[in-house]
Length: 318
Image (cartoon, rainbow, N blue to C red):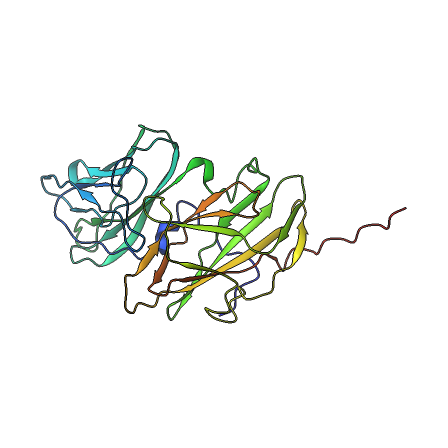
């Protein structure tokens, strides 16, 4: 499986949850999906934080379907109102958060219709974002659509990826693409853009820390330098090179893993805290690692992107 030389559409907060494969159960009525926050029990290294679903009654209209497991970091998402068309996203944590909620419109029999992603950035501790959803109809005859809450994801605003907009204070944009998958093999690109004014030396591999639904470290996974032990032809097995990433230039690393499940407890790690270099500021991305029971993640070395010119030769010393 060969990686493309150009980056795919980045995994922004509004698209990251679309690629996640989160099992949901149909429940009647509206409800609340609450993530464990401070003082709650976090998920284990191989599991997920438990959801707290609070069903309430509704008079007619489509049903809302809270998800299990819930999302992370003290974020509570609630559907309510007539037909479950109103929502609230509350930050019960202690720091500003960028939050993405993915809702799926489905028919009464569970057939998928479309997705309704909602993103709120820099949601302050204790603050609530409110709004109304336009469900539309589920098909001919005007049958109301239903909702499933597929995923809720949050990252600290200070560590949120910024693929567009103003250049971060660090001078580096670090974010993840949408990835590729085939026959249980996964590959996600980490994309790095020097949008600042200072050259950055890259020498080897990005540093990763896998995190669970509660943003807690996931143990028991071998982080491999390169992806040759996982698969060949992904781009993650290219040898490391030392090079200078000058302002305006871009680089890429490829993460590869398999979701094979055999004996043992499957490991799911929605998040990764990434540093481009040991001295770089951390950025939290959401590759949705479904590692199965393999216990391995291959990390490719930084490579200059194919459409980025090589560093120009320096003039000879006078």
